[in-house]
Length: 144
Image 1: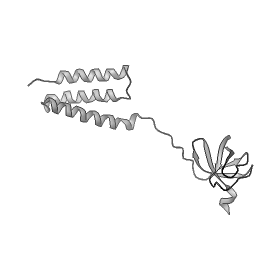
Image 2 (image 1 turned 60 degrees about the vertical axis):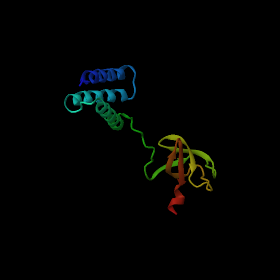
Image 3 (image 1 turned 45 degrees about the vertical axis):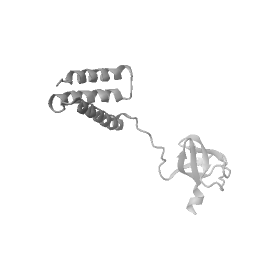
Image 4 (image 1 turned 135 degrees about the horizontal axis):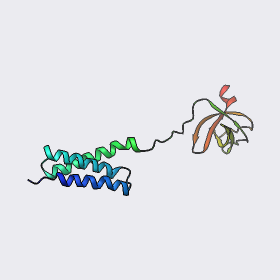
């Protein structure tokens, strides 16, 4: 029965080095690590080639999926904290957009109620953000 340990070690080295020259979001690197694990297991446990290939596929899949959690960039949440206020710079006509001063910057804004218009220089609560548009409600409407 032939030993495939050397082949798995070479495959692991090639896959890990390939990640340096052809970045693949750590997929090739994880497949290389899996090949090293299979090389170790082929010495003691896995003697059959098809079991080694199956183990390599399993370890590669687990490592790639498991590593996504650590290597993918975190997405920033665009949630706006509760009870944040701004001030309208322009009128926000019913169903249309206007401008709101929020955190010292002018933002495109729309009223959460399509049938309601908001006067200029009025304090508004920022309900949420949709892309670069703030969705607001007039402060006086919420306090009544």
